[in-house]
Image 1: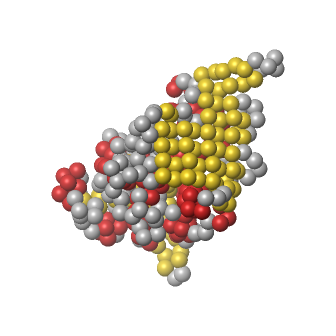
Image 2: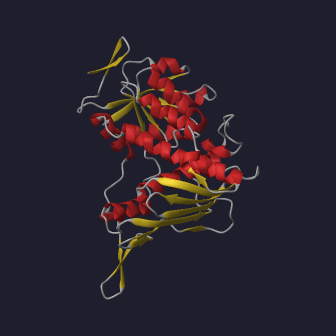
Image 3: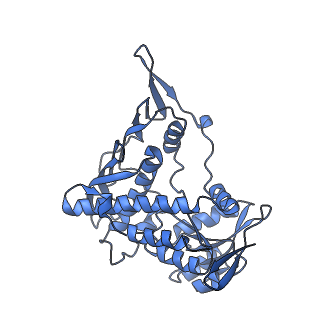
Length: 349
């Protein structure tokens, strides 16, 4: 047991024992929540103890998981939960996370965890209070191309990444995206913007993991999908970084043509593209070396959550990283509205 102090109130929090399953309270049983429920049910190191859904599909939710409550408070006051996992629609995530944190729960939340940088800043402020912990799940970092690029960067093979590019036209839509497409839109976000946020977060998050420097400015063009194609979006982001370096993200899910380049990286010592590293020999010859699945460690989203829960690590960093991603996305929105380059200092939260 650990104790957290706030004012004159002492609150005890339970850290799960290393030899017992992590007990999860699942918030949201839409497509994303149903996926987590299925995957966790196959594990022995964690289990879903209780769930909540907003009641719109109460019968379907209870059919998926009988121990589903129609009232969120009934879930949050339970003492037999180690972590709350939020897989609700995007527009609801920040509010639900703050409610859970206010009940002294440790919280894991799907990415994106919120709709803008203002909400991200609120989440970071919340977990600076004693006894709060929020972990943004590293979802959509499991693709082989991204993991191969990240492995190459982490090994130092490329030196300093000076340029990054990715083009993704008509890429397959993730199965849980329909939930993002029908999200209610908060008043502070333009209609249809949840679609842009859902996809932009994925690419910007991966980019920042690869470049490993702070972004400083953004130029963007965003095309919202037509009413006849609500699961499509198109955007172009040009991002500059502190200490040099730039990146371009070109996504068009409404294009008839199909092209997905994967990440292309140019560094001070080498380059990466299509799961291959390119190094220049002293003779001037460029040699390429393939990266195979055997070269990469497996990626296990739930093992990452379990490691965070056991060691109480990564929480603040994951929230700060998410806030930086949302700052870039807000700068992209502002650039699209004004037609100019936006520095990240112009984004307030």
